[in-house]
Every structure is written in structure tokens, then in C-alpha cells.
Length: 258
Image 1 (cartoon, rainbow, N blue to C red):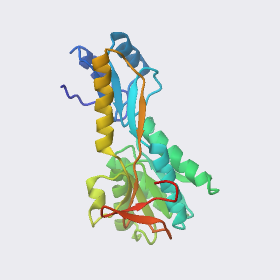
Image 2 (cartoon, rainbow, N blue to C red):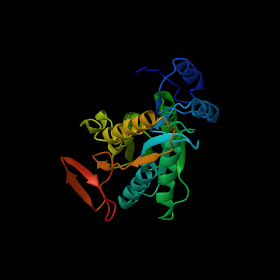
Image 3 (cartoon, helix red, strand yellow):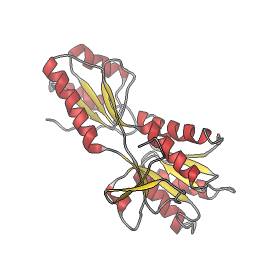
Image 4 (cartoon, one colour):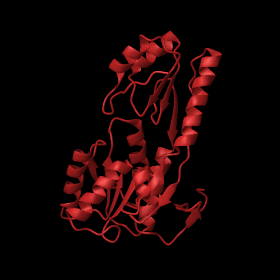
């Protein structure tokens, strides 16, 4: 097994061209992008590719993701149910399929409640960029009272800016929701409401897809979407319901949505 580090903000082709020199049996790409040219090269060489936490339009690549669209949509529904009226989204890496799907789901969920315009900033999964985006949002004449950040690390940065630079109370003045449910989200200092990234079942699915292709000596095109859940904590206003306790974690699950 070989481990290489790709690029978070652009295609990782230079790295994977180097990997191909090792005559690998397969490529598992975690949270990085792959150009169509390199996808074609892998297919021609019979090297299976499984994208983890990303998708691609290439017809012969497998992928495993969380249900990003539905996650964004549930966050929108949750914030609307909490009585919010002014919404903002802070994007991760704009070119990534993960960010596009989370944002699309969020916007779709808000449109269903008649909200078509939201504030927008680009955090780029970078602390400095997220600080700049948060400052611009909160310094506006009509700042948001609900912010969805496309990752937990950006959401925690937004929370720090809101509290310590603008004196805002979380969640009384502004609700902040993230995505991924990283370990720090559950710390009492943050208590971040977040949509979970179901890592263990995603890893199992990715390994299964990779081994299936290696053992069959064929390149397949299977796309698996693993559902997550919205973990409710103290960074967002609680709606009237329905919030359920599951194994010590509060989960917001509207009727019919698990």
C-alpha cells in the first residue's frame, strides 16, 4: 500500500502520474479530484479507481460519498424549523463535487420554503479565508441569523468570529451548523450541530468496490451513497421537534426521513 498526498484545491494529476509508475493494482482517491484525462489513462491501463468523498462524471470510475445533497437539504429544513429568516452558506472547495452537492441541497431545501436568496462566502477549507468570509457576513447591514458551513472546521472558525469579534451569542443571535461531525464538534466548548459523515460504512463500501474490481480484473462504474444524520447540539436553535436521542446523541429526523 502506498500513501500519497494530493491537492485539495485542484486536480491531483501530477501526483497520480507518479503513482502510475509504481504499477499499482488500484487507486483509492480520498477527498481529492481527478481530471478526465487521467481517468481515461487509468481506464486504458485497466487500473480501477474508487473516489472517496468525491464523485466524477467519468463513466468508468467508482465512488463512495455521504448523502451530501440530502444532508444540505436537512440542514435547511432544520434551520427553517428553528424560525430563522436570514441564511448564509460558506463554501469549501468550490470545484469539488462534495461542496457542490452540499450547497445544492441546502439551496433546494430553502427554496421549498420560499427562500431564494442567501448570503454566500468562500472558506476554501482554509482558516484565513473562512475568517475573511465570516467577517464580511457579520459586518453586513443585515447579517444572517443562520450560517451553514460546508465543513466543521470552517463552522468552528465562523463560531469563533461570531462570538469573539462581533459579540454574538450562539445560538441566540446566530445559529451555526457544520458538516462531517468531527471530534471537536462534540466538545462542550463548541457543541456544534453537524451532519455526520458516516466514515466507517463509507470505508467498508470503498474497500469492497476496490477488491471487487481487482479480483474480477475489470473496471466498473458503481456509485454508492451512504446516509448520515443530523446531530443536534447547542450551536443552533432547537425547532419544536422532532429531535430524538440515539445512543446519547440528539438526532433531528423529520417524519419519514429516518
